[in-house]
Length: 411
Length: 216
Image (tube, rainbow over all chains, first blue to last red; front, side, top):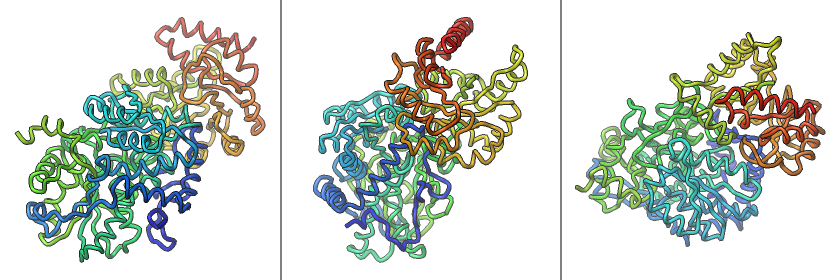
């Protein structure tokens, strides 16, 4: 059972090191006030995943509450449209609350409870992680506050309303651009003040150690299920696996089991799709890995969009879940090591992929996930029309109706 | 001693007054970052307008230092005559690369109310110049009253180090400064001065008031 979370001893791919580094990336760059809390968290997490009762409760909730395993669905009409042999969709959009985020919030909120913290806080961009945290807090009887930029509150009014219905307090963040990066900063600052009684539930595989590892481990249920489902469905060969990347949690959750359990020679091509926004030649994108340079933001070292003085730059994407100026540290390591390939997708390409999946499969994907889907036609041209590709559909598109309508889809 | 704050776009440990000041400084043409701050420090130290410049300690976050380069930052700081620096998001464990290139500069580390004895020993082992004792949970900025247990906290820090212990984060007026001076070796006042910066006369009279209070 614990093999879901615990790496095997003889594995070749082993991250992070004891200090939370992935090669040179990751680590802990935070004010001293929270260092003891992070050390306590790292120890508490290790204890929890070695405790069969904790793992059992987690797996129980993932199954009976979230609805796991999520299907690996063969999208034949989509495959024909994009010119590939087979396309399988990992349906994280079918999870309770509509995205992969809940895999992680259940893990972290169970951990909060186990560590005696009855109050959780979270940051949110599009609102998906906020809703997932508020949902899990309601389930487990925890007090919950969610930090959200004022611009995102405006763009995602429905999710704000949902969080309040679920009993969470939504705290508007007016600093900076009023988006995800500002919400992370506000949540971190608040955590520094309330570290005694508050657990910070970070929504992506980023932040100071042990967060990137913990979030990856909780999200690895995605990739582990895919490996099992490939066997079950007797899929002879998979040529590529694709996921979108903002902070990178659904991507690392998809890729990590492939890195850990599949020998390099047999491993499919792993591809992450970053947001190119209005184009890489503009300053309106969120492509930290492709266009950024290494630096420290929000407590960890990783590729980062930054200016000459080291200030983080504003990221942009049509999808509120991908407009983050940094990226989880393990992705930076995987990029440098050449273990994962990172490509970029513009707003326009993502919208096109969104429309295609909706029309030919009757599945409305999140605009974030549409970035991953947009790589399919490109890939067909590269690896051929017989190839088999798996795409993680990280969430559903209900939340994006206003955005796609504004963009003129369906007119 | 003068603590010179370097404007930064994501000041995790700073409250609204310093964050706002940083935003204003950066909004100017060409921005304003670590390089510019060190130029200001160099000009001041060269020509302080008094017989001898007080020691200048820069406070910056990790990323501007990394962006400029650790060795390059250290060189420029030494050239400017800066005495040391404070990097609030660089805990001791992450500091080895910086300490390896920063000979001749005092790197000041912070301790917090949450620091265990074990942490205090770790910080004391690497800090130089003084130990910065964060008096309250949270970010920089004035508080209505000093934290309960501050005297005890300072005493606990002092058991781990022979360096001077200076208290900051939340000291906002002369009365509080006098209280802190009675229990610690130094008092650090930031936001309360920055808040007055548009009025140099007010800054001067406030600093005189603080100085008188800590010497009384």
